[in-house]
Image (tube, rainbow, N blue to C red; front, side, top):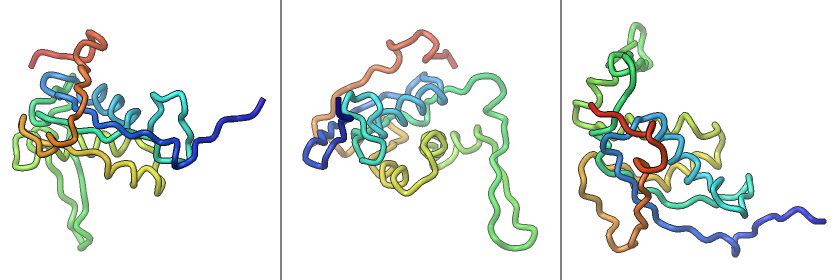
Length: 153
């Protein structure tokens, strides 16, 4: 019996639309990362970009459990003494709340060049409007997959 390996001609990419309103961030990021890699397909090949294109809307209404909203996120400017921080709540309430979802999905992918390419197939929008209506995305209802996926805020 031979091991199946997909070729570029075998790849079938779809467009998936996910509404993040009321969904727990970690569970959402896990599902999105799995879709981006293509691990939900029977023809999954680890070294190929098999994943779907994923659109996430309402990223500003994502939920966090426990005290994670008060957890600081650090970064460094590159200059001496240039460490900075913002809490996750401040980022969600700020101008670019979609960065929280992008960072969570990025950290659930392996740190290699293929996953950086797969991350370009992710589009995150803070509001309910998106610019990919022409692709006719299929709606994936993350809320109904598991009762633990949602949380009232």
